[in-house]
Length: 324
Image (cartoon, rainbow, N blue to C red; front, top):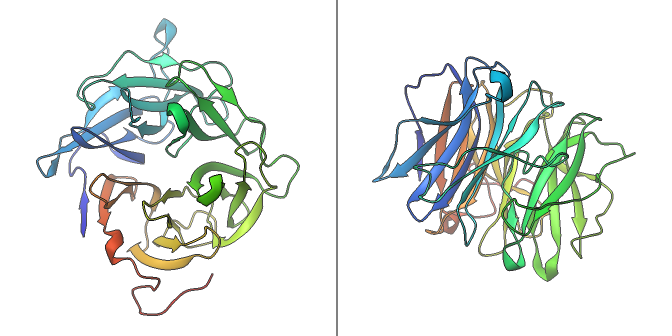
């Protein structure tokens, strides 16, 4: 339905790792921007969509710490709880193996923000993809760590980041080195995580009780060691945005796939197919029922796309069905 850049000009040369949420005031997107990923001038930026357009990017968090030491910021994650302020999680630190979790909040839809607060030791918050909200406002956050190999885990908070619970790693001793999970929900209380891996495939784990997870297994979908995101639609179908490639760092094309059960995936749309880097997508279903996607466009800008689930058929744009 729509495809546009969130900004055309900005006071930073490089942008990456976008996230998107919806508040009472409208859509809001965030990403990190600076001279280059990992440089100390990399900070967190936001843009709000109001009146049919995106606002100019505004810097909302940096990596300045005690004694004026400065570190780069990484991977912001927005989430608007059903009750409470808008949450913006992000990471600060010299590298993904040595970063720590941070949180700022907004009571006015992202116009103003609280002072930054560091998360407890050992808690990183949602590492790339959005949390899901369970009963009584409990946030289940998909997370991972890189300081002791690539390990996927889950973190939960019943009080919007004040206190936390931490699962054990879900891929210890297995075949797969995986990070950056996203969470899907299924009938009967089942949940599924899909993960980025170094083994050329998207991996998955399942649970029927929210506590005991299956051993990590490969899906039938490729992964070029790049971030993905997924959302459970209001009608129960699962939607996935990812790079349909297996060669490492080949971050095109950027694809959308759909599934009725989280197991059998069918091609739906191709968002980008020309050579380039189209990566780290984030996706939500808005109050309008539409699917809103943000992603990195060649490390220079953030692109925004809108899809209508009413148009989704189990066939790709070439008129045939893909069985992966």
